Image: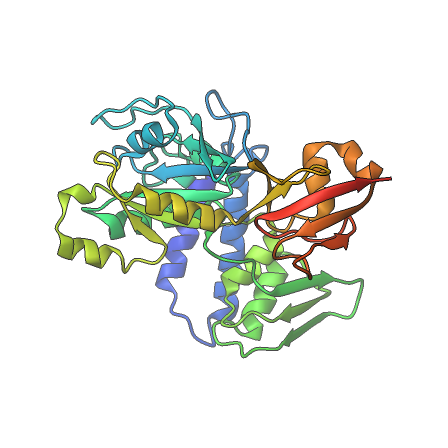
Length: 369
């Protein structure tokens, strides 16, 4: 029996099993088994068929962040890509015109953002249909995903694409669960929770741990409404948590009343790539979700240079990160830095060291030893 057949068999059994106190242990085991089989599909060395790579899918990364366009064929990804970046991505009304990853660059607030137009995926992509697995493997490496949808059928397509990405270990618009599993040499299983367990019980937790052969460990749950899937994600440890924007394309084909309804979909931006409608809002939301930090340099006895910001990622925006992004020797030569902006305590500037965390639009002057 192939991996895909085993996955289908377990999914069918889970669908037939009603969740209650008597079945929670069994369901926990099934969810853990399903996750392990999915891992075989994720791991290109496991024999499950391979995850990424291949001709046209290994793209050299440029810019400070990458945005991947994911969607079904003929939803307008290539048109949007071409107009945003000036990079030619084959456009046609025929399905599957784009067959490889097409990279381009969009400059926003002085920051070069790499845009990746991925081939259209189809239902069953995470199980290897079409070239879906390679497409989703590239999406896993992006800092932000644009899920491009046709406004005439957005909700059904949204549901299918989310399921495909979910099956490949991508968690959209989520943060890692506040759950820790710590192995130990002896002492059995100890489960503690600081929030009520509303969607998982101790039997289900023990079943999942048993399937992973974790007989001695401490489990601490601080995640409100934690589920068995959350626990499996933590144990697997190969999930990626990526922000996503639902780009609802072709609004030139619908009414104002229908457009108002589309705005109720969370994390969505309705646009028309063909007529270039509402693209400014899309770019603003993209910048907001990427959460980048622009830092301006101030040479000695000169005004700040606002033309070429040094762009850093949030969470890696210390003075040392700033120095390293210019040249690694600068940090070694630095005596201290003077910072102006929202991260500084004083309007006149603050003297700081390498570990100081910079905020967006700070100005930095490096004083060497």
